[in-house]
Image (cartoon, rainbow, N blue to C red; front, side, top):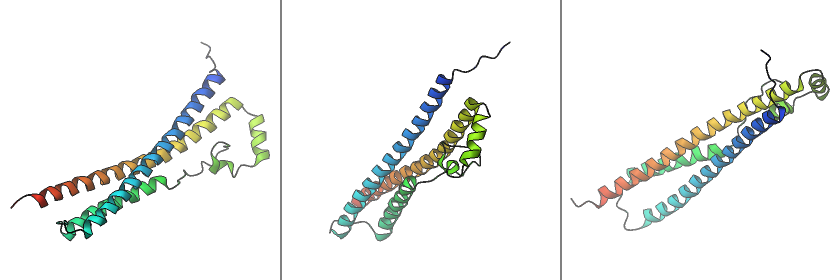
Length: 168
């Protein structure tokens, strides 16, 4: 049985689409992290106004617990925004900047012209997609932690407020 060749246009569209979706997910993670940072800033600002008011009935340890959780959540959100890169693959690549900056142009051109170009381009794109996927995995795991800590801080603050307002 003769193996059919993959249509280069279909392969290019598939890999290009995958790459674009991953780039969109990076933007989405960064946007969500920015939203959490803005919310934390607003809540901490209101929290400090509450601290100096006469209606503050929370003990200092409760305030420190809530602020600590908010600060940790903010730190995780900021770490999502911090640019991270996967390690260089040590392979010929023009699509992944960590590899492309060290490519010998003459050597790459010879290798490209003397090989199956479709296979070389496909492997290059797949390596780049893999590197971006590793970055995304780190971003979303840190974003998940930021969300959990933020939600925990809000939940604990609500519980502390309910307990403080209960009549004894």
